[in-house]
Length: 338
Ligand code: GDP
Image (cartoon, rainbow, N blue to C red; front, side, top):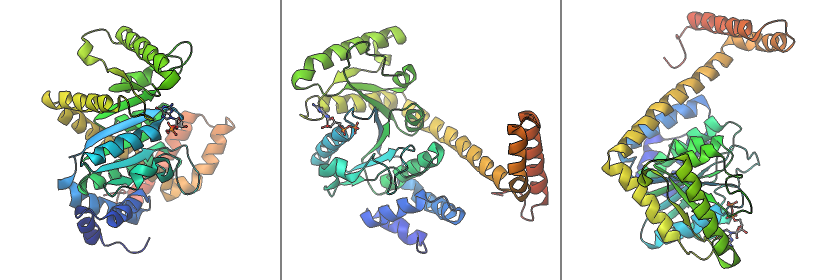
């Protein structure tokens, strides 16, 4: 990355320049300390413009129709005059050039639109780092005037949790399957969902999709007894024909309005900020612990000793933390980040 002029970058983002947005996101995706520092300055500069978008997570197993759905829904929203951004969280993908999710070729129509910005998942092995970059990208996209930010993720468990922690409404796309509907969907993921849509309700699949939605709805009733209003609605749609898409979007907005009128949209976002802060503290501490000179020097040996049973994990932990503490005391600048 060439030298970064944060003020120029921020001004360009505020003006809605795609090029500046793309460069800003590239900066946010870098984990180099000097880039992290500039990223912090950029986000502080843009803070007054963030938080205004409708933040929606879209999850589902591969083949559920996520990209078709986002392409169709996003195109509709653009036609209604909204600016739409799509970002993604897909740490499992290590292909060079980034992830399949949010891939521009999968959302060709939306990508071609001037009012839409589609960005693939940053590559990276750790969910934490990928989620951080995506969350921060969302802030930049909001500052650039996007009304709706869609965060796409593959349904594998942890990803959904990370995405649900950065959006207002979490939409689960699912499919009608033969047999037990719940087999393919983990209970924990159903508990995260704010809206559920059974996709591919078209042609020969329509009847099966309706049956699946009814069964899922019944299962949710058992799982979450109490007032129906608290349970996520289960709808059917076809990303291919567009049938039901308006209803799904209406359910997303309804969920968000419901949160807003109860004051819990602010509460949700406030809680997300707090959790996020601690997640970053944890991540920084982990990096810091692994990175001090004494720990770095002793690490391989302590790991070996623990693997071979010469040292218990408890004693290994104590030894590493003692080395870390010694390094902190001896560091000329004090603890990292101070
Ligand atoms: P993703 O992996 O979840 O992003 O799924 P894709 O959007 O790539 O869709 C997987 C396949 O399902 C593609 O062949 C799509 O054309 C097809 N598909 C997606 N949505 C629908 C739908 O609503 N109806 C039907 N019949 N096919 C769909």
